[in-house]
Image (cartoon, rainbow over the protein chains, first blue to last red):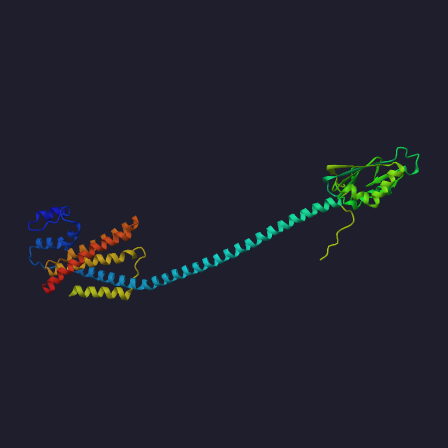
Length: 284
Length: 110
């Protein structure tokens, strides 16, 4: 028999079917265990002597209840300091992490400042590198160790037609040297003779009837290509001692001395572009 | 009289002996205490109504404690332990309140 049937079969008992009564009001009105009433009615109010067996059960349950209350109170009391300690530890941890966060942020800002500084240093270095490269290129052109191109003049010189007949009709190494020196003085920036670039180590001298430039024997006519201002170079050349000498040579011995201007000349590099013995002396 | 004595004895034993509750059962102890409180107040009211019965009290006490613990345990397993224990405490609290009100009416006839 279920409880509901029991209740229904019992006249006078208030049936509180949860289907009809709201849950809350049922909870509030039906507070006493129905069983007390049921058992009491079964006993029929005849005061039967209570058995000592159930009395012992009651005592045991009450002791159990007391123990539960005591232990639970004790536990809560014991847990309180622990909870407080945990809370304090958590707060401590939060503060520590916060401080660490702040520290790290400081580190970050310091590092990014450093990065910015290094970047500008690098940029400056790159700039000066570029300047150095430019300067190196310019020096290489001036020294003759790199090929050069630009406007300039071509000077073609040749022995006199009957060189063997007249004594002075042959071009000598000194004549060429005078011409080259005059060209330098007139503002030449790069010079080559018959495709041999003149560098700081170039020599122009006679070796058994022939003139050697960079230790290569040349034969007339000699073509001297010069990079410089085509407008001013010829005139300024003629003002130098070398230019005047060559004017004299042309007039007196019939030596060919032609000057032609050109917009673009290509001069090769002196192939010997490295020093074998000399080293720059570093100054500290 | 003997019941009150047993109760005090139990409380004293719990406080003095400090029995260690297994770690697994610890979360269910407070809710079990509330359920037991409900059973105890119900028993007290029945006693004043003159319909008290030892057996009914023992059974209601044990079943109350077990059901409350099991409900909370189930809630813990389902992840709604906090809400379910709140619900159990609300229901038990309402019952305790109305039982105490009935007891008060009995004692003070008011």
